[in-house]
Image 1 (tube, rainbow, N blue to C red):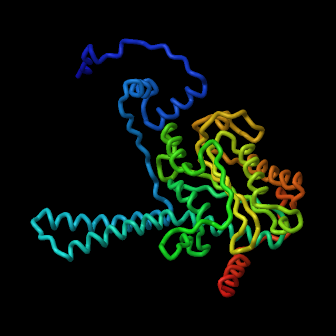
Image 2: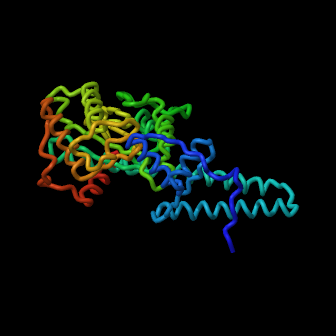
Image 3: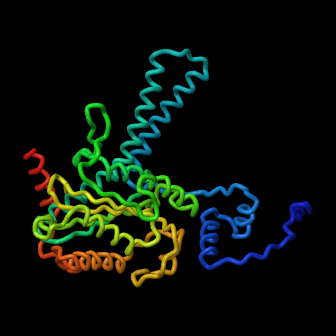
Length: 355
């Protein structure tokens, strides 16, 4: 059977010549690939303001994610049964209203659990840093990659007090969250108080971070030696200045939050700087020695932490501490004493008993 001919009015007979830079072409080509469209068709839809439907395949292979999906499924089945009851002429009753309220409550609980994972990882990292610094006098660099799409969760953690074991915000007698007693906050390529909205805007513009499995942000923690305060006069204000300079130099083109805490984890007193960057680069930057690919300096592409980059970041922490007269050892060579999991949990148990 012959292929049916298109209506003459639907044939694409007109040509438009358009010149692009290499960066513009790569961004458009990448977006067309994500949308599973030929390049020409993608551009045509963009020009004519037609909606481009992007399909993502999410592979649920994480145990915690599978558990959450299963529990959401149970709630969905319960709601379907309630809907079927009403659709077949069932009467409204207090019992059915209670069932609906129960399902809604369970959904909110699961949402809180899904966001809580990030805080648990962060708390664990801070405790490991604390124990490491008891064994060696040095500044430490820690990295956490997060898939949490709620950038506001990061802002709230940095600004408000949290219980270190439950990861829940500490509230006053009126149920309001309490600000940390001392913190310093700056934004790079963004306003620190609209970091959440600005990151979402960047992600939408470049069509990135739209699926669960994508890494949404990278969290770096520079934790200074507790002795630096007494021996070298390190202050929170000075640490914040060093953190902002470090972030500008080493994460160029990214939207970033830089926040310094002076209380340390578990009241240890060590000053530490949190640097949180959106995984998608907002602006083009100059190529750097640690970058492996051309795209590592281009807007619209993800933060790529290679082994070379990781070594470079550690070296920069060492250089920063030495140039400012702060305690530091060689981060590039293995420590003589490593912290085992057994040591970590023993330390954690002793902290709980002493409370």
